Image (cartoon, rainbow, N blue to C red; front, side, top):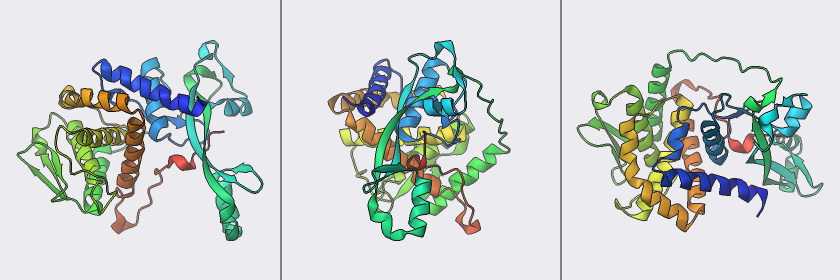
Length: 319
């Protein structure tokens, strides 16, 4: 088995073990700041995000930054004594030239194509893998700059309002349990006053908005499934993971009530993953697409704002 597949196998096994213990693994990462590369300062996404966030929570790392061995050597940093065997495999994407058989960063590729657009056919996107180490294990790395978020609640409210407006979904707050109706393309949320706190309210909004991306006018997933079916559980898995990415991004917290409401799906998820482990990886891939779609629509397009935080995993360079 390749190192690339071992990295994915590790994530699947960790998730299965957590689910069998009655825990929902991605909830452990909600209070973990999104992992990023110490040199590029870009966030890891998708499978890498979940894997590194889970490891951070499990091992109790305080630093959310990760570093490759090549980056460590180039910057003349050193491992601490307890770093042996603590590396984690991650996957990333890059451009490969089929003529000169060399690997190019996406930035270098874009510069080449800008000058010589006819060379576009020479390149193929390929996946690679590398080992990263948490910065708690490394000496000499400067401390991260402290970023103070101002008026985060207002920013989050505006962001969610932008998503609702830009994706065009019908939205209503009423005396009802939360749900998304694909036939009416409608998200229904209980009144804000009924939630235990702001975090639970926004987490529920994000979860149902994640479901709404499956509409045929958006990402076009098969979401017209009956409660209790395997396909329904798969869609719930996508929405749970994608909302966890967003919750992590916005620094929200979950409450025990929210956790208990979703424990009913655990046995279904265990069976789905045991029957076919690729279903978890597919759910994570779909969740990443959902997050990208919602992030792209989180901008106030009337003001033509540019969101500088839409880091796509395909653009990350870790070596």
